[in-house]
Length: 157
Figure 1 (cartoon, rainbow, N blue to C red):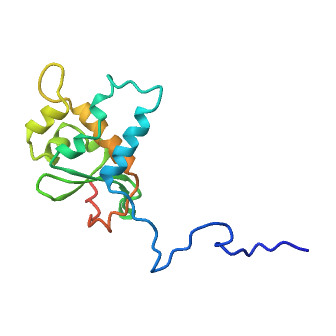
Figure 2: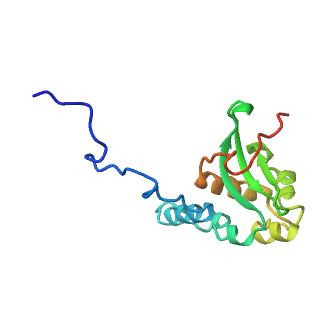
Figure 3: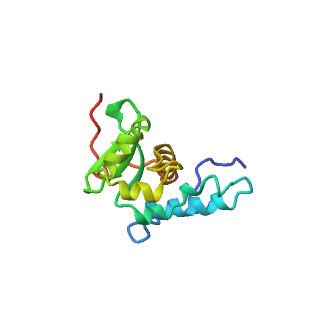
């Protein structure tokens, strides 16, 4: 009575997807970020006062869209964060490009949104908090296929 390693996936309770039974759709990036926020809020170590700028409601208020993190093989597997800027143009930013100029470019220099979302204590907007929030929620969305979203590999500098 030998045991076979050849097993039917339906016997193991694993789903079998067909044309009539496709896999479930992935949630929208906004829904993924909102679910992650709820998970974080439930954590006993979360300090809401210190991390208030990470609230996902900003995703509903900003004129940009977040699409997740990608790696382009042509760029040696470097990590890029995918966005659509206020003009609807695709933008891929490296982590180090989440500086004052890079974030302002996503918003086409519209300081109003930046001031409302990430006000600085001494006036203006806080670019470090903005970078932290943007990259945090991009990480929540996770790895995506850039080609499927219409993103071209960025130019290597």
